[in-house]
Amino acid sequence: MLQQSLDQVFHALSDGTRRAMIERLAAGPASVTELSTPFSMSLSAIGQHVQLLEASGLVTTQKKGRVRMVELKTETLIGAELWFEVHRARWERRLDRLGCLLEEEAANPETPKPGKRP
Amino acid sequence: MLQQSLDQVFHALSDGTRRAMIERLAAGPASVTELSTPFSMSLSAIGQHVQLLEASGLVTTQKKGRVRMVELKTETLIGAELWFEVHRARWERRLDRLGCLLEEEAANPETPKPGKRP
DNA sequence: TCAATACTAAAGCAAATGCTTGACTATAGA
DNA sequence: TCTATAGTCAAGCATTTGCTTTAGTATTGA
Image: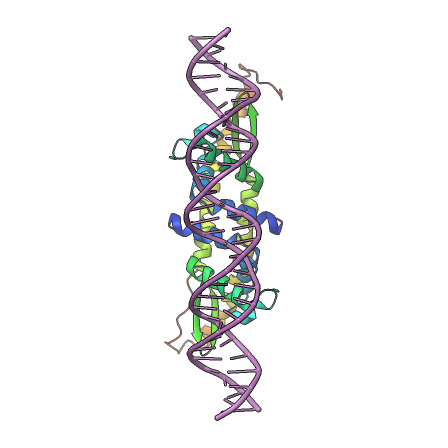
């Protein structure tokens, strides 16, 4: 996933309202009005959030008649999750090596072990 | 992980400079000056990014002498990744059910839909 | 046909962001 | 001690964000 695109995705997810929309959309597609029901906010504001979500690639929309249906675009969400996986792998490798070193000198009680991993 | 805290974490990750810092820190702790080397940006700006990362809980810092060492706080990163896992699980279950329904309809096409037909 | 519905576009606004520069403190090392 | 280093604080500034309100357009259903 591109750098700029990750910027947009994480920015989109940094807003609680938009995250709640994503969570709603995980249960299935919804119209803009349906998405607006949990919030005390103008429909205009909701529409702007939807536009931002679409620009970030997190949703696709399609207008049928006067209703715009919004649908989750799971590839983008997975792409963002992948960023975590890649870097988690890196730091876990490092902590593994660190763990070996610490075991070798396990006599030292001042140095706590790094957090446990599954 | 708390709602407001997720706001902060995703906001922190929405900036390419800060993501690059996280990626650097996945390889091990670094000082503020070390973190600044890849960027053509004032040290002050880097310091402000570090402060934001610390406020979001993505790193911890510790001043030794005149050097501030910055370290990745992996629990927070894992907490954010968990948000994806939870919601991926939800939409995957939904798509499974949808898959079953489509298979059933393909078997008994009582209500033909526009588009693809078997 | 005609009113209600579902958005949408535009302008405006307060607050937040991502820098900058300049002045400052504390520490390390020759 | 004296200076270079590492960072910090504060003010300022252009841009972006997350809303609002107002004024539309397109579509639907009675």
